Picture 1 (tube, rainbow, N blue to C red):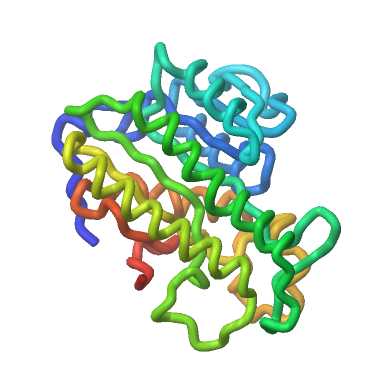
Picture 2 (spheres, helix red, strand yellow):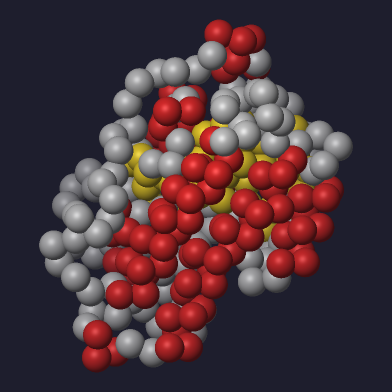
Length: 253
C-alpha cells in the first residue's frame, strides 16, 4: 500500500477530515471512531445510531437511522447535504442476531430467514448508505467512503468454511464496494471507496467468540479506531475498491 494523498489534502485539519459521518456511532468501534476523530480536530461529526442520541455535544450532530429502512438513510443524507462529510464510515454490522442466533457452523443449519437478516444488515444496508451519501461527494476533491468488512469475507483466504451467512454477507459487501469504486472512479477521480477489517475487537459483536483467543489477538475499541483511521489517512484513489486490514495490508478477494 502506498501513501498517495494529494498535497492539498495536507492542508486539511492535519490531514484529518474537517467533516465526517459515522453510521453506527453507538457500537464499540463506532463510539471510538467518533472520539478519535474529535480528538484529532474533525470539526463536525455526524454520529448516527438507531436511537440518534449518542454521542452528545460538540462537534457531534446526531441522527437516527436504521439499516433496514431506506427512508431513514435517505433522510440522514439529506440532513448532511449542506455540509457533506469528507469521510464516511459505516461501522454497523451483525454476527449474532438479537435473538441469540449465531453464525452457522454447517450448511445443515442454514435458515433463509436468518440469512436474509444478516445480508440485510451487513450487505444491503451499507450499499443503501452508499446510494444516498455518495451523490453528495465533490467530483474534484478527495473523499473517503469505508465500510467495516471482515477477513472471513475473503473467498481465496477461506480455509475453514462455516459461518455461512456472515462470510457470504461480507463477501457480497466487498463486491459491492468494488463495483461502487469502479463507478465512482469514472467521475470522481480523487474518491476512495474501501472495506476495512478491524480485527477481533472487544465489542458486543465479538463477545460470544472471545473465549480461547490467543493472547494479543483481542483489540480494545480505542486501539482499533486508531488503527483504522491511520489506514484511512494513508489511502489514495489507487486503493479504491480494495479491502484493508487494521495494519493497512490488503485483504485478498
